[in-house]
Length: 402
Image 1: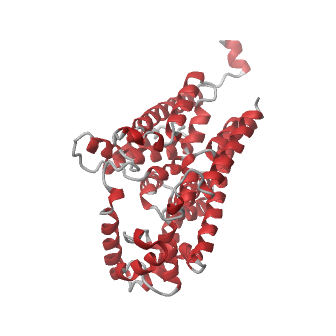
Image 2: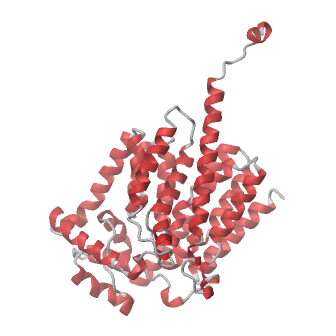
Image 3: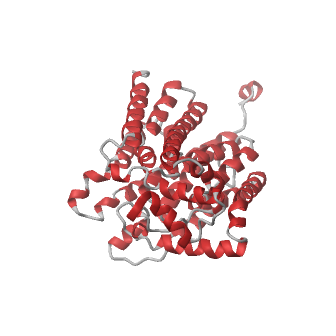
C-alpha cells in the first residue's frame, strides 16, 4: 500500500498534466497556448530591437498570431525580456512547444522540491513521494501548461530559490527569486521577509540579477524614464482588462468576494504587509517556524488579500510540503488537509451551471481555513521546539541526585 498510493498519484498526475495540459483534453482548443502570444511577441520584438512596451507597435505583432483576441498590452516587468527572447527568436508554433516542454519540466521541478523538503523533514520515502504525487496532480499546473503561461516558472523558481536561500546558498537563491519576480506580486511578501530576516546576500543578489536582466529592455525603450512611462501605461491598460475586474470568476482574493457581496472595500493588499511583520515578530524568540511554513503562509496571505487568477495558485505549491510535514501524525488534521485539497482541486467548470458568481469563489474560504490552520500548526510546533531547546538536559548525575 505504501508503494501503491504514491505510484498511483504520480501516474495520475502525469496523465492529467499531459492529457489536459499538453493535448488540451476537455479544453477549448481555440484558446490553447493563447497567453503565450504575449510572451512570444515581446521576445520577437526584443530580438528585432523594438520596444514591446510601445502598445501601438506591440499590438500589430500580437494580432498577427492571435487575431481578434489581441487586446490588452504587455505588462510583464522588464527582466522577463531576455527570458522571452529564446521564445521570440523561434517560429511561433515552435516557441509554443518549447514553453510547453519547459512547463512540464517546471512541474517536475516543483514535485522534486516537494519531495526533497518532505523527505528531509520526515525521512519516509513513500510519504515524500505521495506529497510529490499531489503536486503532479495539481490541476493548476495543467491549466498553466495549456495556456502557455509563466506561473509554473515562477512557482518553481520561488520554491527552489527559497530553499537554497535558507540552506546556506543565498547567491543561487537570490538568482532564482529574481527570475520568480517576473510576476512581481508573488515576490512582494517574500522580499519583505528577506529584509526583515536580514538575508542581505540573497536580497543583494536578487536586486542585481533583476537589474542586469532588465537592462536590454530598458535601453531599447529609450532609457529608464521613457521605459517607466511606457510600462506604467501598459499596466494601466492591463488593469482595465475585464479579467482583472473584482469578482471575476477566475480571480482570487477576499476583495472580490466582498465586491460580489456588495461591499466596496479598499484594496486589501496592503493588509498583507502588517501580517508579514506580525508573523516575523511572532518567531523572534527563535520559535522554530520553518522556512517552508513561512513561504506557504506568505503565499496564502497574498492570495487572500491580493489579486491574482486561479491558475496562479500553482504558486501555492509550498503549502503541500508544509501541510504534509505537520499532519503526518495527526489523523484529524490529515483528513481536514485532504478535504481542503479536494476542494482546491475541484474543477470550476462543474459549478458554472449554477450561474452564481459568488459560488465560483468557493476556494477563498478554503484558503482562509488553510491559512489559519497552518499558522496554528506552525506556531504550535515552534513553541514546542523552543520548550525542548530550553529544557535543562538531564545527565546521569543529575538524574541520580533528583
